[in-house]
Length: 151
Image (cartoon, rainbow, N blue to C red; front, side, top):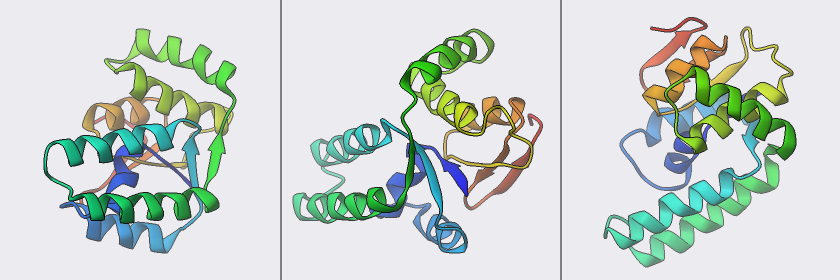
């Protein structure tokens, strides 16, 4: 099982440059752990693509269907209170957006701070660096792993 940031889930359901390596990674370990509000973040990304003309409406509907299939199988961290508290600490320590702090906090809460060797999948460089500093084995599909220390 790995924690999947929403940035890494979008290419699983919507064709992007990183889709091939992400599909390969997912096929190797289909046991996903996500933040309880990841679906909202993913829908936001898909809607933005539609508004920008990067995703046709029919492909949007296909992507939503794929999202629903993934959601049926993934594990969500929905401990909102603990995640909110942990995110506050992360915002002080790392240059993260609120959404990214919540993603990282959800991963930390889910593994009870036992991050050593636990995979954290993301396409966001800033989030990857913070996750590595927190001890996760960060994986950026297509580029390999950052390991458990910051770059």
